Image (cartoon, rainbow, N blue to C red; front, side):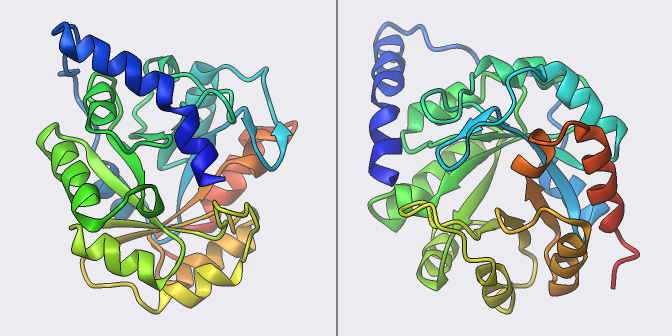
Amino acid sequence: MLNRFREAKAMEIAQLRELAERGAMPRPWYGHRPSFSARLRGRGPGALIAEYKRASPSMGHINGTLLPRDAASLFEENGAAAMSVLTEETFFKGDFAFLGACAGHGLPLLRKDFLFDPLQVDATASSPASALLLIVRMFPDVDALAAMIQRATALELEAVVEIFDEQDLASARLAGAGIIQVNARDLDTLEVDRGNIERLAARRGAGEVWIAASGVSEPSQVRSAAAMGYDAVLVGTAIMADPDPGSVVRSLARAGGPEVS
């Protein structure tokens, strides 16, 4: 599946290369970017990253009626610490423009997409995003991942580096990752192993920010992840598929926080 995700980005990257060759790449966005990591540390453990996701390969259509700007307002009002925005078009029905639509509500924005070309980092910097997602398995080697992290940092973007197993974690650390996202879903097979979050929690390093993703959908799971030491949890489908997404965000946000032991 990762190869299909990579192939789906070919046209986008070709367009970015054409813009770069003409000197027409969009300029960096110079507005205020709230710190993604600082917000999670301040609101954790178990801080909620609420995700705006219209569709997914495993679920198909999820929610096409909730507008991005309305979602950002709803998430902020109900206690989310940050917001993840799917911008991938083919499989997730996202749009790069969603980032701009979600800005202005005080939530640090994470661009969630399949990013592996430096020009995609430059493009992200033209948006109000505070952070971008880099998936270890999308890169041929540690050096390529490290270059992307360094490029993001130079453009004042934080890199959230996603792993699935111990080997991915080793690569992420060698590349200089400071924010680690543990995905319970294997993106090669799309199968979910909820035990993945618990197994890898024991390897959390001092000073790192850790996020649990794909294996959390209920308040009890937020509390469990917080107790394991996760600074935050990322939840998308459980929020977007519910008829009352605000109430889901509220219940999940209340489950985490400094009071969780």
